[in-house]
Length: 130
Image (tube, rainbow, N blue to C red; front, side, top):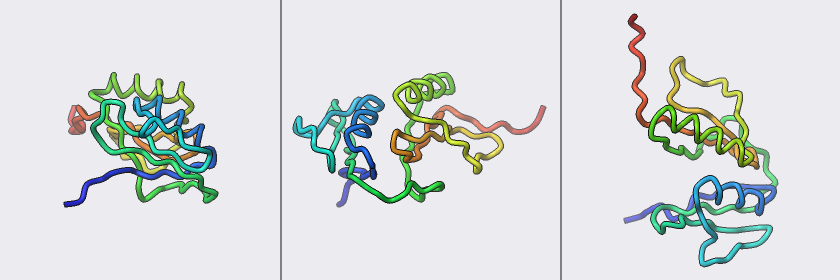
């Protein structure tokens, strides 16, 4: 059986990306190794879950990436607080042209422009009835 070991993200500035994702997710360098300017792997400080590998990349960020991270928030208030915390860490809001009418997610970009979403896991779509 296969399991997800690491999720790999490209970065022009690996140390900056590592600092962002460490602060955003509470991750630490694997085996205490901070890596280098070309490659590093971060893992959950608590021990469980997939790692994030950051590798130097010169390719442009995709405007509508086929693969991205979804970060789960408990409810709308937690989602709003997490979005503001992530922005304070260096993330940016993305002017996303594919939002549905009643979204349960907010699209952000990390310090390298990689898109990710913050999801309100308590979201219930409105029925449209008054």
